[in-house]
Image 1 (cartoon, one colour):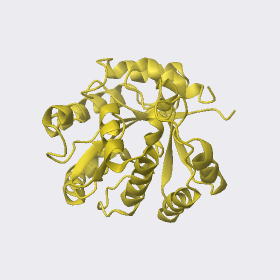
Image 2 (image 1 turned 180 degrees about the horizontal axis):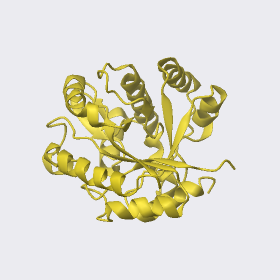
Image 3 (image 1 turned 180 degrees about the vertical axis):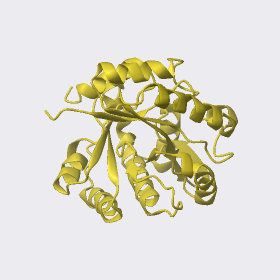
Image 4 (image 1 turned 60 degrees about the horizontal axis):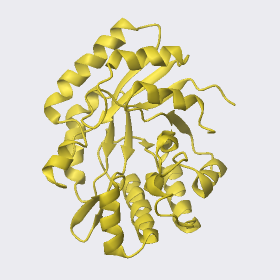
Length: 264
């Protein structure tokens, strides 16, 4: 197995739905795992009013906290200079129909971003946004579109839109957990292998010169048990030689160790 030298997807105590593990403890764990580089990719602020305000407040960093987040990471960059490379960045949500707002925020903070990921956590259907990694929302969406297959279609089409979207010069060039929709694949089993949609997705990534966030978080999810991507989609990605960056998607220091055991 190739030695893993980088964790490109780590969250922090600034994450509203994460843990309060110290930022420095993630750095120390990176050193313990013999990593050469880590990226803090906290959830970028969301456009206003895409869902219930209480739920939305739990999804991402609020804009007012960005300076404190930057300062905290910069202090660690200075302290650990020469020991491990620490990148200051974000996981940016693609929200269909709100591209201008995302672009405005990226233009404001982009010059300070050193690494970033573009992810889909929300899909849009008939005037509403649905969180694809939150069980009650997925169940509600299934009721609307009438099958889990249609949910998968909607998700992968939204990922394609994220690749095509004009989000300005600071748009992330790494596509986050590209099969996140399978987070509940044990709860709602489906034999989904739309080669046409998968091929379109991978072709778009390759044409844009983007890379993949090879994300191991699904291995620790009770209803998932696999990496994002995996299966047929992963086979197509490998066949097309799309570059990837390993990501633990850690929301706790203990999650980082899973990066070294993706085969499990």
